[in-house]
Image (cartoon, rainbow, N blue to C red; front, top):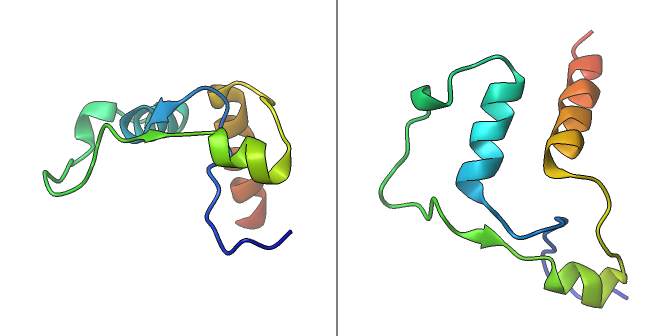
Length: 79
């Protein structure tokens, strides 16, 4: 069913800060180099409720595993 709503595809609720620091660390970077802007919600948690309601999906893979898969996919596009 088309709802026109954005869906967070996540397992456990996770903050934007955790997603970004994990991505930087997985790419061998230093999370301390991330520049956080005070006007943005750094600690807003992505919620899976809408994903479960609309898509009927539950938890899939752990955050780090999923982010690693995205990095590998993106890297393959650059070749």
